Length: 150
Ligand SMILES: [Cu+2]
Image (cartoon, rainbow, N blue to C red):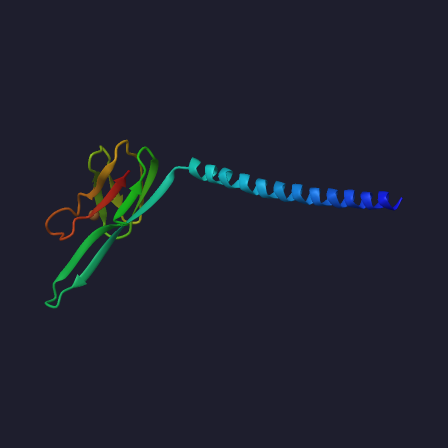
């Protein structure tokens, strides 16, 4: 009799332990399965890269005003074949006519407005986003951003 009781107890203990392991692994694997699903949802959307137009302005000791216009950030990275949405927002400067070298893309960024440019590069290299308004020799630093594709 006593042997049987002990046996039942160990069966119950074994079942409890078994249930605990099963619940733990279900929790663990369901948690792991959620991660890639979340990433897939993210990558389904087109990646957006924000750039703004900025102006650096200063006065030299002899009272001369010096200034330079820049894209910020000055370098962005895109994967080959990746569809990306460039969101160009005009902060400084009235307007900036631009083109992307090696493509047919051109447009204008106006102060307080956003110009959205969808891009996709099929070959690797560095493509220059060139502001045509601030590209002359009066600007000591050309307003150029590098789009690095690899
Ligand atoms: Cu410009």
